[in-house]
Image 1 (cartoon, helix red, strand yellow):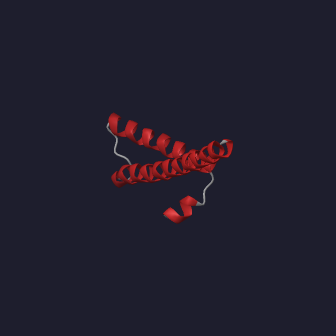
Image 2 (cartoon, helix red, strand yellow; image 1 turned 90 degrees about the vertical axis):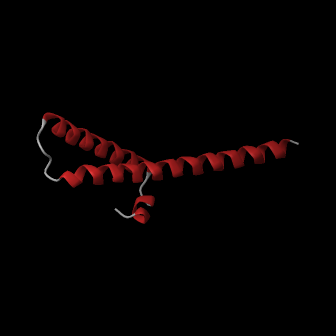
Image 3 (cartoon, rainbow, N blue to C red; image 1 turned 60 degrees about the vertical axis):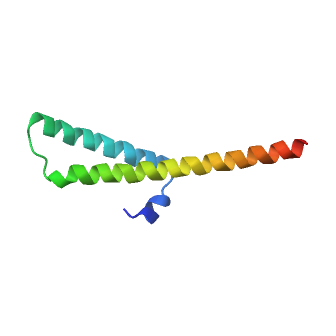
Length: 81
């Protein structure tokens, strides 16, 4: 998925996709630990990169939420005076 498409996802969809990818990565790591080779060795690397992309987007959304919260708190603070 492209980054622009990822930005359109809701918070719940993003969380679900991250969880699904982490489960898939766990399965692939278990296969490697047992000694069987995954269907595509490149798949593990790509999955890790995708998880990082999704986590980055999730943290960006989190920080945007914090910024808006801080702005609202500052507005309330100045209204009191």
